[in-house]
Image (tube, rainbow, N blue to C red; front, top):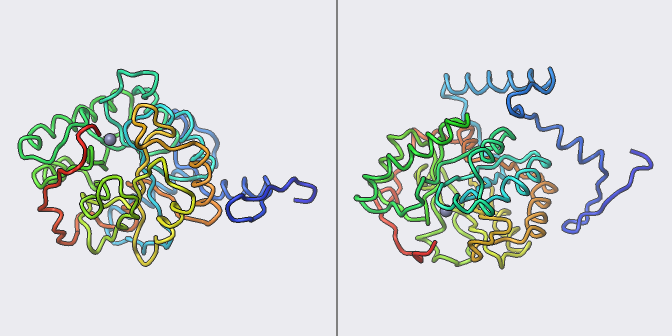
Amino acid sequence: MRGETEWRSRLTGKRWTRSAVVDKIQAKPPLKFDRGILVSNRVVRIASFSIACWCSFQASGQSIQPIPDKTVVLTFDDSVKNHRTFVAPLLQKYGFGATFYVTHAWMKDTEHFMNWEEIQQLEAMGFEIGNHTWSHDLFHTPEAASRLPRDLERIDEALEKVGVPKPITFAWPANRFGPESREVLRKHGILFGRRGMQPEFDYQNLGPGNLYDPKVHDPLLIPTAGDVYPNWTVDHFQRVVDRAKDEKIAVLMFHGVPDVVHPWVTLDPDKFRDFMAYLFEEHFNVIAMRDLQRYVDPTSFPEDPMAKARYNDVPLDR
Ligand SMILES: [Zn+2]
């Protein structure tokens, strides 16, 4: 648009105008209504069309699409307050999908962690709410697996009270996992589960971690390609996500932005802005965990040795 102010990306040197950015964002159809209020007829038509497509895909079971290069899954753990106040509005501006893995573990700290109403607001903004267990205990042992069904249900019940659907994806607390709990997840109707970068990489090793390869990995034990630590740079972020191609997906794990209570996984908000700007400018396909259903049939999966493995080798304070 003539006469419009341009801004230049600090990362790529590309030039943008406000109208170009708005056009690009609006090209992505909104799928959710804010608190059930119908925003416009256009939104209703788009949403109806999307639901119809989704239903035909589910019914046919044959509409699995090839995985586009540059597919990135964003996940945010532990119900940190700034997920609602800072992260979600920024992601919404870019039209990105994301999953927020919620737990009750720290909710008594109302200054730093969300309550259920705030979590409902994230869902109303179009984001996925995933199950990270009520207690955030470790679920790698057979004994712990016997407690897992109730722990999952308590999250389901709290979400139901605020009108949020039962989660279909899961993140293993503190990255521990075991075969008995994996079976509990399957019976509970969980389709996809995210583990950490371990055991292939030690905790706090920058990696990059393994990409998710649906031909290799169990869908309930999807590896994290990048566990975001405070010393990550834009260069490292690019190294992690630029590998997402050839039918493989980069799944990223964030905590608070910043994370005052868990400073070893904090991330500076300016860095986060730079990371998200890079994904936007480089045309990444940025999705939530539940969106993996477009590309992967979670009922048909490879034999992954991790499905029989037990992992318990990270610091207990996490
Ligand atoms: Zn956690």
